Structure formats: structure tokens, C-alpha cells
Image (tube, rainbow, N blue to C red; front, top):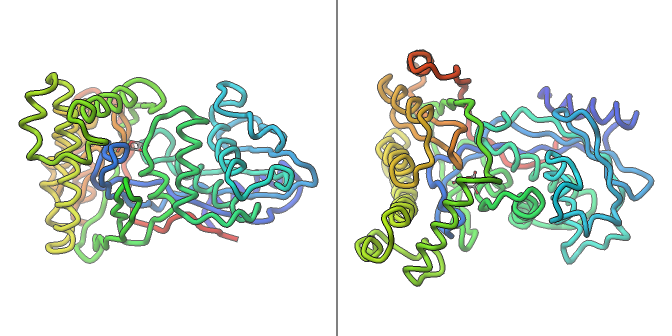
Length: 392
Ligand code: GAF
């Protein structure tokens, strides 16, 4: 049993004195390619990782929901009857509790749920998804909680519906205007595979990655640079994309191809154009990556990863010096490819590295960070893993 699972179980025992009625877990994710394309109705290619958030849940005799977590000192309690008005008003619960309670709130509003019939629950949460590293620790909490409550409240929602619930919690309860990629990756992840997702139709296909057979590993380089998607840059980028689509007269940037870029350049200011160019070319890179994985295997996608990073650095302007240094150092140590992953402004980079070069790559990245005077990064390998599940 993993330690986060034990931690969640013990936290629940400390809270209630009893054992769990059930245990569930959901993973964080790495996005292999396709950044800031999800809220533009485009394509993404994330995979769930072998770092998970665990939920231990106890049924209560009253209609109260209590959430507790190993990363917060106090448990938070709300009455089931108060769920409908809990969000989107701000500040009624501490920020961390908006993730699980936002899920409960969104589930309580689904057509199959009747507030009077939802049992009270104690929910204990522990996680080994690094928080703030851009590996979707928030989606892992949402997906684990959604999966648990869907079972206990017998709502019968499928995985895509639960991913939507997670996104609603993130957008409306937490207030981060994100797309649906992270929740879909956490719900649908498969071992040794990525999820190729069309964010307009939500059609998802499983793409075998074959990293192991190719002798490759994915090294995560957590820069320790903090970021938040609820404020600032993420929201601005999203607004620029919406403006770009409006100027081009299309519902979303997904509806443009690289052939539309010359006209876009004529119609909009330089900054908006570069935001648009990132999204349009990134969508194409996702399609090219899926094709390349199928035809030539993971060893052949390095150029696409690098082009994605350059586009985020130069056109979308969401990289930071630490992320650029991580990518450059990994490449000079012989990585197949590297890029920042996730929403940017901090967080983590990934490098696709031959197994026997992992240590050399880590050393090169650590040395480059030290030479630049950056805080030492945390580095670890991840493997593509299964999505949300019931554990016990
Ligand atoms: C964050 C968001 F949560 C995702 O929806 C996505 O937009 C990503 O940034 C950028 O690709 O992880």
C-alpha cells in the first residue's frame, strides 16, 4: 500500500475513530504535448502519472460533509443542505477545501442527485502528487473525490461526466479558468499510454507510448517556481485566444489551421497574433506527435517537444528562465526532447531521456541551475499510469 493511501486511512481514523467505508485514488498528470489548446477546443496528449491522491471516506449518520487533508491543519464541515449555495461565492471555505467541496457542490447539482437523499460523509485526503509543480495535484483531488462520491451517492456518472464535474469545481468553486485536460487525464489514464483528447468532442483515444520498450524514461524537473492559474497570466492568455478567435470569426482557435496564419497576422496586433500562432501550431504538433508515435515510436518525437517549448517561450510567453534552463540542460546532456509541461509561469519541465542517461541528465540540470543561481530543482521519473479507481 502506498504511503498516501495509509495517510488518508489514518487521517480518517483520527477524525472519526472508525475505518473507511471505501478508499479511492486518482493520479496527477504530465502533458506530453498540447499546451493551452484545451480551452481552445483543440487537441492534447497527456498521461496520468504514478503519483496519486488518495481519499478515505466514512459514511456519517447526519447530513454533514467534513473534509480533512494532510496538507491542512483543520477539517472543514458543511451541511449537505447548504451545498447548493456554497459556491461560487468566495471565501466561505479555505482555498484547499474548495477542491473537494466544489466537487460535492457540482455533483449535488447534477440531475440525478437529490439533496435530501445525499448521505453525510467524512472525507480524508492525502497525496503524493507534488503540489504546485504543474502536475495537476488539484485535478487529482477533484477526480479522487468525484469518483468516491459518485460511488457512495450512487449517481452513476461515467468518467467523462466526472471529469466535467472536476472542471466545474476548478472553474467555479476554486475560480481558475482552466480547460478540461487535467481532469480527463486523471480520470481516463492508462498504463504505458497517453490519452489523445479532442477537447471539443471529448473523444479520447488511448495512444501506446512504448517508453519502456524504447529504453526511454520521462524525467520531471520541478523548478520550484510557484504558479497559480486562478490569477494573472493564465487568464490573460485565455482572453487573448478568445480575442483572436473573435477577430478571425471562428468559434474557437481550433477552427484555424496554419494556412490561416498569414491572414491572422494582417488582422490582429502582434501579441494576439503570436498567442494565436502558438495555439494553431501546437494543435498541429499534437496531431504530428500522435502520428509519429504510431509510425516511428517515442524516440522520434523529440523535435516536436522542443518546437512546443520554443513556441511557449517565444509566442505564448509562459516559460520562465528556470524552465528554459531545464530544457536546455537536459538537451545538452543528450535528452531526446524536452519541454515545459502544464500551464506555465513556473512548475515543471519534462525531458524524454534514454534510461542509461538519467543520472547524467539530472547532474547536468542540477549544475545548470546552480550556475544560474536558481533554487535546486526536484527531479524524478514518472511512468504513464492508470486513471482514477476504487482502491478498497
Ligand atoms: C493547466 C490547466 F488546468 C489545463 O486546463 C491546461 O489549460 C493547461 O494548464 C495548459 O495546457 O494545467
